[in-house]
Image (cartoon, rainbow over all chains, first blue to last red; front, side):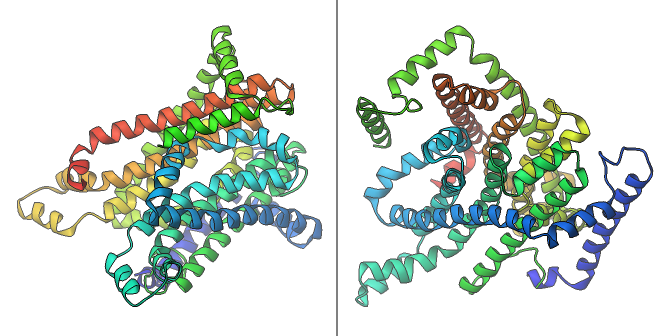
Length: 261
Length: 244
């Protein structure tokens, strides 16, 4: 499916669209209609991006953001998948945890960030834990749905052939739920990025979110937009990695993604 | 059982708060009494109003545009090829990073927050409406074509209803996102609203007011989600009936 969609013609169209957008931006920026602070030209943004990419200190900022985002995300993935499988296979766990998760699901967890700052300090820990909390929900909900939908015949035959409970969980339930789990991971990853940037914007002295606010406060909009581009590219790259991993692990079912093969 | 668990946790919290504790941890009973007090003194309601004025237009505009464009891209090939690559490639980008730019362009007031919320709400709605429209059973389209339905009729009577379950899933994600973005934009810069109230009371060490605002945020998020589910139950009454 995806291979057919991504024949060179559509790649070309996509690139052409991008070029037109960049060209229009550059023309507007050069026309003198707006101040260069409001609309910096693409060449200046590109130059700032180049500076960001070669300066070790800005790479360190990016590393801070990525490591926070990925730590919270990984923690949520491990605990979320375990909880989801548990809820899917145990009626007792579902009865206890199900209402807890569905009841607190629509509550914006970002609101407790100030309490987290007081409890865990203003450094990375409070941010990682908030990312963990926000990412946990989609992962638990999709894993729960996936492990409940496992084909019964597979479970019966595994039990019939003498597989232990733990072995059934690991070899049957988790693989069968894998497409659902990855759907949850793909929902959670952009959330992790959002939360890491937000928390760095609100209270931080490092990371890309801080860099955005710092550049804005010093009216270096070209630098700010370069950081925005970097964050955008990071988001796309991480999503691409998750899709790659999914195609590796869930090789029997292809995802209709928009990444070129 | 879930409610019992919740009550048990609250009771445990209440019991634990009898011991020595830091200033920033309040017991549930204290929070409840502060909440009632803030409601009476009028410290809370103006901020709730200010937040709703930002989040509702943002959610409505973003999700409306998202659903309409998503449905249309799901049925029209030209629009699909024009829009979908852009939407799907920019989907993993955290939309909050555009807040500073939008602030520069349209000012620091409510419009920038509404625009960011609308932008964030657009994506889940577009994607779900798109897949919903594309997932319309071909057999139904053929049947209605065979019975002489016009394309516009097919769109309204076949494509839209069969996309609705996914559209509502998208709306629910958008609603949750709109609250995340609302409170974070208010925490970053605002002079009113619940996010601002949380930040301000935190930095002036008024933990009572901070907890009141957090409880209000939770209640607002929960209530709007329940409202959306209620609408869904009404609109999708036929689907609930068949899936049971």
